[in-house]
Length: 189
Image (cartoon, rainbow, N blue to C red; front, side, top):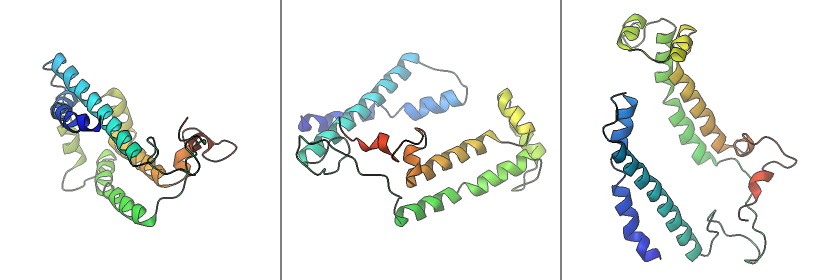
């Protein structure tokens, strides 16, 4: 089975090369050139993801680790498998993550200054408003209140990224239970 996956995954992956072009076209509001072409690219993307996950699971099984999490578990193969508890990411992971997060600050600062009516990077708020065309009513209402939608979206992304580095991020959406991370401890059924 593993031998068949080696040539199959790249073949399907080549079918996904048009996905960025479709995304840019749709985001720009230029309309859809071919609905069947988009369906083909989306199907190729989905199949590539599934085949890559099957290949990863097969590789893990051959290595003698858990096909779902990739870690070695204690006990026999018949014993219930338990995923290790949540821990804080190591410092060598957190430092670059925080450094990359700081990369959004100049952009978010300039966008906030423009939204509040100030001048940043040699561009006035009026010139910025003239260059923007339309936008949704909600985005315009938030801009009138001094809130930029893209800065909010970046803030949400930074919050979720921070959650990946700390134990609270594993139980944040599900809420607290009697034992922290109990819903995530079971690795395999």
